[in-house]
Length: 295
Image (cartoon, rainbow, N blue to C red; front, top):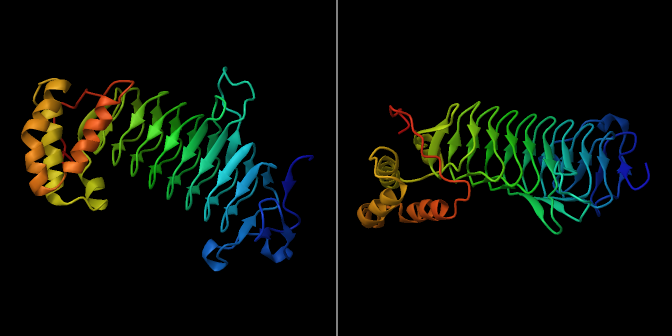
């Protein structure tokens, strides 16, 4: 296959430049754990790697993976069977212009996940560090995924979607083009998202509704109890006071910023404000009638 290389008869390890390979004994037909040979690439013989792909040290590329186009894969990433990274974007406006996929270190892609490169000359599809992308997930062109996210089985991210650091998407979530999910937010399984989900909140359902604060996620991320209490008050002003979004934000600035300066959470409130004022699709303001334990 001209212009491509695939591993030889056994897995290959390459401590040199991407694309260089040497055959290993047949008994090494399965990738070794990254930790067992730090800094060594392990490529399954059935994987296909394009000439412009850069594979970082310590990566494992599993059976029948396809990496094509301009792709930069950071160190210590693991790709299970059938992962596709760098395929052409499914966008009618794409005209073969030079675009790329940039992926940070320590990401895990499970079976048959796909990540498409961007559309628009010089643009990128970007995935940060430490993410877990589960089976059958699709990350479309021009998406931006932060660090330490969990994207569960069969989630479908439309073009230009942005996922904040530490966000958690349940199985079968569908996200409309240009929508955003904020930092440390959680979206429950089988939810269709067509507006922006603010940071730190928990949303689910069809239609999507905000059901409370993502208290469990905040606790796991090490957010202090005082800061979580401030965020809970902010959530209630936004979704339980019937003030409307603009008035609720002003009330949060007036009433909660001084408290946040004392108890912690001031930086988190500013993150919330920044997310709201930069929303393009609009903020999801539908809420459940009854609060849950997470709220």
